[in-house]
Length: 188
Ligand SMILES: Cc1cc2nc3c(=O)[nH]c(=O)nc-3n(C[C@H](O)[C@H](O)[C@H](O)COP(=O)(O)O)c2cc1C
Image (cartoon, rainbow, N blue to C red):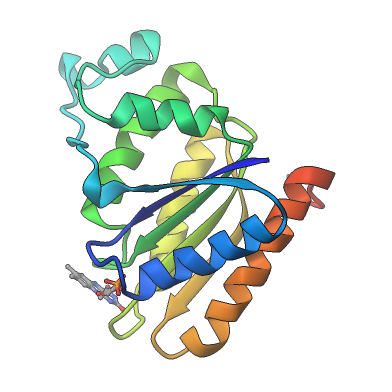
């Protein structure tokens, strides 16, 4: 199974990166082919809301901005599984993550529907008080809903639970891989 891990934090050795690594370990343990995409290193502009709000995304499912967006979107479309991992900023996903997510939602929800029915794992990593972790997961899931995608799991990682959540993330990765292979035990 091919799984893309899309993740965002400026730190390559922080909480978010550790969470991503653990999930990856679990996926690899079940022979998944994993590609990770570090959004902070990609060139992703924010949506310009061209064409009075509804741009080419609504007319033909493409974005007018020439940057790394289309290539990443295409990888997600071709993947069997998708894992979204973001640091929590202001009770939300990071700005890098949001820039990508907004444009993906526009292309997919309003025209393409390529991502419909894909089941994903959502992980939010909060290194501060931990406040806003659930809101972040909720915002991610709301975006998925617009595209007809489904969250198979939503995982909050905070400073105070990392000692037991990081090992759990490896288990989450291996369970997700099994579900991708054998089918999901969920009906919505
Ligand atoms: C702009 C900004 C906003 C943040 N907002 C929150 C927040 O709402 N809740 C929280 O617990 N931590 C917050 N943090 C802390 C980040 O969640 C923390 O830096 C992040 O988990 C670190 O992950 P990392 O180790 O991968 O960088 C914020 C950090 C920044 C830079």
